Image 1: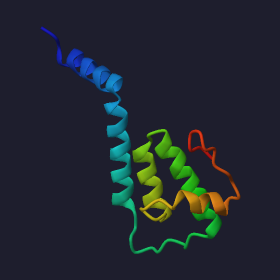
Image 2: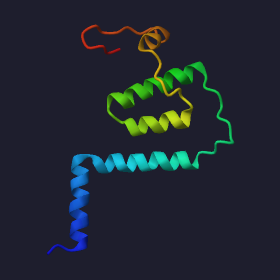
Image 3: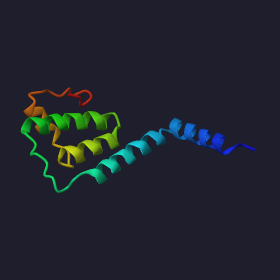
Image 4: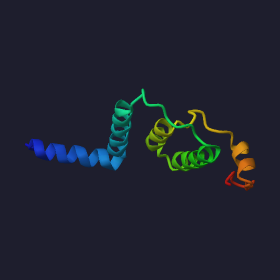
Length: 104
């Protein structure tokens, strides 16, 4: 019969292989940050440049499926929960979009 330590090791290994353990850790981290966030202290307003930079970072995080990291960015930065319109970003950054694969 397996010991408790062996069962813990197998469970941890299984959760890591499935990618669940990383998501759980990230979610716990996000919740801890939210709990520690001092709501009485107002955040500085986002400058136009920081808004655009944060949006690019959010797009990168979401593209790579770092959704919990993106949620921490949104809650800590004061970035709007609804993403900025992609066409707006393209115009503001004087970028162009490749028609083949919708990349900038």
